[in-house]
Amino acid sequence: MANQYQVIDEKTWKRVMHCMVFRNSVEPAFCVTFEADITKFRRMVKEQGLSFTLAMVYAVCKCANEIEAFRYRFADGKIVLFDKIDTAFTYLDQETELFKVVNVPMLDDLKEYCALAAQTAQKQKEYFTGPLGNDVFQCSPMPWVTYTHISHTNSGKQENATPLFDWGKYYEKEGKTVMPVSVQAHHSFVDGIHIGKFVEKLQGFLDRW
Image (cartoon, rainbow, N blue to C red; front, side, top):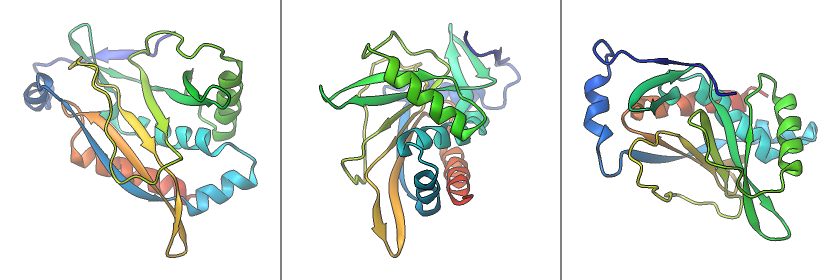
């Protein structure tokens, strides 16, 4: 069942001009990579026996859900704002070295989400279960490389406004464990200030433990 959304009245919406400027761009999405301190978060995940990858999916999707700009989408030519966004993530099959895309509803509790995500990923046999819905965040961990920049394939669909989240291989730096994290978002809805809010929220969540 799809999440609920409200259709935005473009006549009164304060962002309408900015949205239109970027809506028809050849490449309307932009990507930012930043460094996150995961020292406390990684320790907590290890102590509780959780999957680091699934816990990170929860962390980025929880924080992105809290920022309105990340919940806007285009739907049937209209601008809509979802009440909640669910999760989709890549999960590697160790034998074939091919990934599958797994869809999991966003839950309030970290442990419950990780349990459901692990169960769903293990049960799913297909690599792709169909086109992703409009109401997901896409997460794609890349734990083999400590990258400084990342780019994505372009579907050519200018109104694909699904944000993409990636993170790379973590490493030790000045006594801390740090990791590159990337967010790609559609400029019709998301500006640098919103990326900044996401970075702040995510780091606050990672430090909470």
